[in-house]
Image 1 (cartoon, one colour):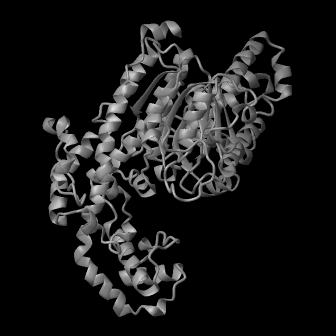
Image 2 (spheres, helix red, strand yellow):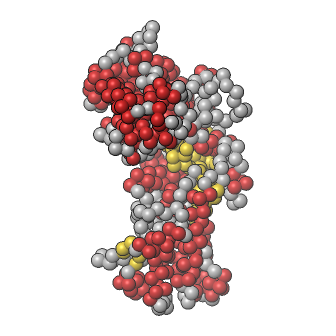
Length: 600
């Protein structure tokens, strides 16, 4: 491993002083622009947000943003000192936005990609693998029970995780915030890794455990008379089974419903295959040692065993004690048993329920904890920074690969500074010394806007302008007729259930517990007609927030990368773009390795 590392050093990444320079420029821009990200859409009309923050007509703003979107890269003139001349973007006295062109180009410049912060994923994979062929079970295809987005994420991230594990000589993976276990099961099934999936939701982990229990149970039932070959054939043969062309596996409504009842994590769209009689006959030809089963039983066993096989690796199945005794009668079978036993020990997925914080003791959660790689696919809120802190503080965690999400749920150290706050040591943001010294605060609205998907908007998946407009006008009605300037309750997803603005207001007032009789239908429609000509203000403002979103995300990711660069025990750290941002907007992984990994 260290020879491979020496021959193939990992790509160079920006050092801490370089990152600080990037942060300094970004903060200079955000000091003027943060007010736009911090403004709440609900208050858009009640607080005259457009008039307070933008000194331009909405039509010109939208036109300038469309023109800017057609530019592939920031102009060279803007890439240098032009970015520091902020008065060209914002008015020095009023702080209102003056130049949309300069605003858009500067925001584009301070995205992760354009700042040159990312390490190309292919370059990293090449360095990690060296001349070594990737360890992979070629028979395992893309898992069908995942949607397109999840499948894209899991396959890309699992490939990188396996390469990191091989590079560092690690066999144990801890998947933090594992959810339904998509990534965990794929890592175990395809790459033969021992994976512990930790999630705070007992519902998620119970579903995974139920799959494991069913898989073992039905496999045991299907082979009651083939114990002699249980450890050799039963554990290995299923990976060789292939259904020939022309044999169809159709989802059966009863089998789906039956599987869902014992498997709460499966949705109605997770169709489980029901092997037809012809498929069973083909498979039986390949299984000469299997005695004939009654037709009804055989359908049940194949239906359950082969649908659940997609969720967990075959090597995770443990043979019964009687199977082991019979296998020992043959030297060849004993060798098979030892081989599959080793495979089973190194290829298993164990779902666990635990609430993870930066102070969590992994030995209390995982009994056979060893040197491991900690990973997380879209770890929510503070779970992402907690994962990084566990990595830096726990000797057994040799590497980390974390993709965060839900920035609005991060805890901020310097938010609401004048309010009484509970004592807290490990805040979600900021993590690094530089931003702590700056006492920098984004605020929840800005962090919420960081979740906006610029790439999706750019390809036509626009913002729901009308629903946002409905909510903003509703807030004016609530303020004027009920004297409530700030609603603590959320209206929720009512827009999709309403055919008109009038119905939307009626349904919203009812949900908020407000007296509907205070506002007549005529008054409601008057509000709608009065504000409808100003809908373009809201559209233009939200587009400004979308353009600014990558800058807020850059700040959060830079904070995490700087934190890792500050740690003495970290040998290598980087940001890597793992996913297509149109399919998966939160596409950046924070990766780091300890010095023990000989990172070149």
